[in-house]
Length: 177
Image (cartoon, rainbow, N blue to C red; front, side, top):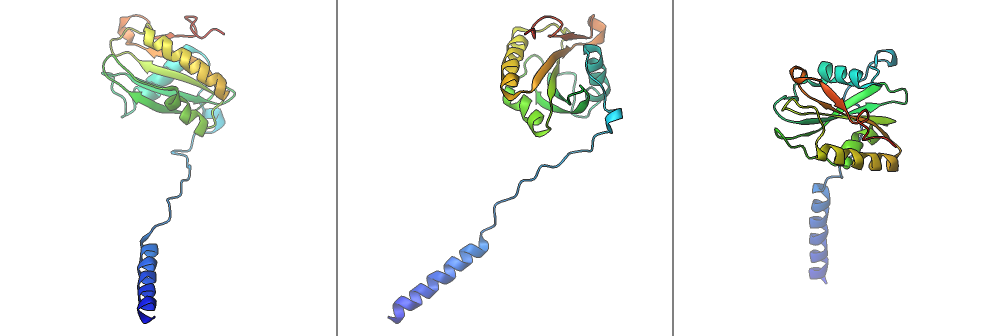
C-alpha cells in the first residue's frame, strides 16, 4: 500500500510542477496605434483630387513607401467622409499586387470605419486600371455590401510627369450601382 501512496504522491508532484510551468494564454487587447487628430483637423476625402493630395502628403512621404513597387493603402473614413486613418494593406512588385478583401476590410472593421477608399500606385507611371484592378474593385464592392462598409472609390496613382496623376475607378464607371 505504501508503494501506491508513494507513486501517487510522486505523480501529484510532477503534475503540480507541470501546472506551475504552464503559462496562461495571452490576452489580446486592441489599442490605438496613434491618437488621431481632433475632428476639425481630420482631412476630408470626398473627391479624387483630395484623395490624391492625401496620398502625396501622407503615403508617398511615409518610410514604408517605395515608388519602385506597388503599394495598396486603405483609407478608413467616418460617416462624414473624414479620414480616421490609413493602413498599408500590401506591398507588391513592380507590376503585381496581391490583395484580398479580407486584408482590406480587416482594418475597417477594427477601426469602426463607415466607408473606405482603396488606393494603390502604378510604378510605371500609367494610372489607367488593369483588368486585375477592375476585378478586385468588383470583389471589394460585393464584400463591402455584405459588411455594410461602403467602398467609395478605388484610386490609382501614377507619376505626375506622365499625364494625369491619378484615376478614379468611380469616375471611370466601374463602381456604378
